[in-house]
Length: 125
Image (spheres, one colour):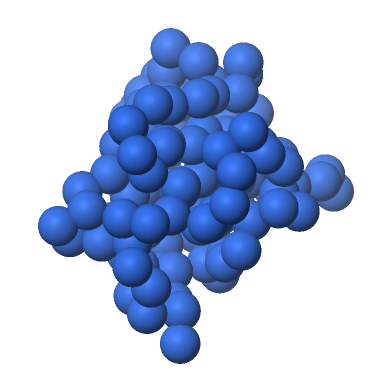
């Protein structure tokens, strides 16, 4: 059974840093592209960042580019999202997701194969 378990969310102030983790089990982690998505109250789930399984290439949403960094440790079956200079508009539930197929569809939530249950990040102004 595949499980993706996020951790590291919480309440922070604007300008602070936070690191989210996602521990994967039940799958061959190195075979999957990994991504982070988020969903704010009343809004649709949106892409945040992703990292390629083969070459470590990364892609980011424009809204987080330069502030967030995604990286993975295959030996630990874990993907991280380092969030710096957070803003109130970053408030959302953050989800980890795994995609076995095409890298070129990685930003589309509907194409992800597995999802975690999410971790809440709240940024106060």
